[in-house]
Structures are given as structure tokens and as C-alpha cells.
Image 1 (cartoon, rainbow, N blue to C red):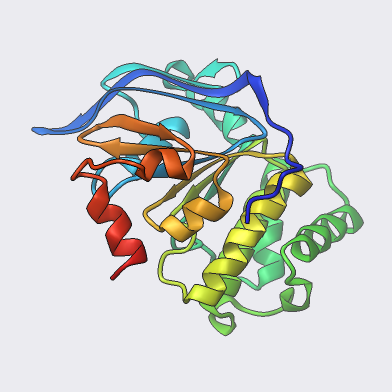
Image 2 (cartoon, rainbow, N blue to C red; image 1 turned 90 degrees about the horizontal axis):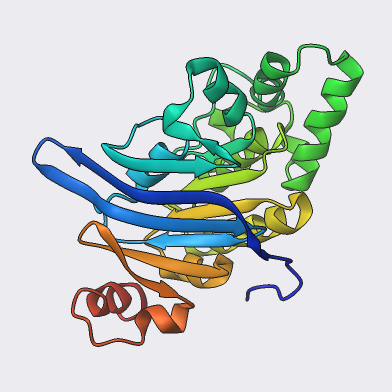
Length: 257
């Protein structure tokens, strides 16, 4: 169940996607979309596979450029930044990849140290150890600090991936299918962790998913991508209280099949 004590500032916009379009050849993925993420909010983006959800967060993080429109993140227009400015902005954006993206040849400790040392070169060994241990404790896996990724379960790898993202204390978290490939109990654990991250680190987050149980548990607000546009937005009930045949099968698959 969603927590009631999360503070969201609905006057402070941290991401504004402004009339953005993106195509790949003849495939029009996003069509003049507009989207806002508010400070402290968990925003869920729903949609079927291939509807442009992952493209959206790649545009937000500057991994792709829009064909039209602008992407505003933390006061910067992402698609107008040079490489140095983009690298600086990305330090404030945490990207939790679907496959966790851990380095298999590194221990958990080394995986977390890597982004920290790379971006904060003046830290002492004691400060590095403190940061690593603190963020691992925050995701409940301090005991795994010296293990290799191959020794961890899928849910544990997902948690370590989130921890590695959090170690730079980002203002924004982008989660790409955080529960994909996980069993129902582990999904529940990851959903709980996403809510805990929101509370503990005061993050603003976009969660890309087609898992409605995840959406219902973590989302303060939801939007649904349909035919390249955000056709529906609001609470879970507002999204699915419809006879729209593009929406109903999505709900039925998650909760009936």
C-alpha cells in the first residue's frame, strides 16, 4: 500500500517533457508528448512493450535526442547541453537498468566504489567505505558487500543495482522495468524498496513498467502511453475506470489471467 507521509511539491517541476516527438525511420514512437514530474513524486509510466516507455527515459537522461521538442531536467534543457554539461547533469540522475547492469568481474563493494571514485575523486578510503556501507544498509544487503554478482539472486542484483545508483545521491531516479523477471514475493520487496528510496533519499522518480501490481503500489500518479501519446493520467482507478478497448486488456492480463 502507498505511504501517506511522502511530501510532494506540486509547484516544483523537476522534469518537463515539452512537445517531444521521436521516430526511428517510419516508426513514430512518441508523438508530441508532454509530461511533468514533480519534486518528491513517484510517477509511473504504463504501456505495452514497444510503446516508447524506455525511449522516454533515454530522452530524459540524454542517451537519445528528440526529433522535436525539448526535455527540461532540473532546470536544464537536456537536448541542448554539450558533453561536459550532460555529464554533470547525469550525476544528479540515477538510472536503474532492467538487467541491473553490474560488472560481473567486480565484487559488490567494487561495483559501488566504481561510480563513487570516478565522480568524487577527493574522497578518502574511510569516506568511501562509509558511503558504500551506508547505501548497502539502506537496501538491506550490507552482508553481501564482498560477494560477486554471480552469487546473488535476481532480486539481490536488482537491489545492488539500485544501491549503486543511489551512492551518488541523485535528485531523480529513473527505473526501467524494476520488477521484470522477478517472482511475486521479490517483486513486492522491490516495490517496497522503491517507496523506501523515495522517503529516505527524497527522490523524484519515474518508474517505467507494465506490471500493474508495481504501479499500484509505488505510484503517486500514473500516465499511460497509447499510440505514442499520454492518453490517460491520474490515479490507478482513474486510469482503468474506462471501457477503452486499448486499456481493458492491459488490466485483464495483469489481474485476471
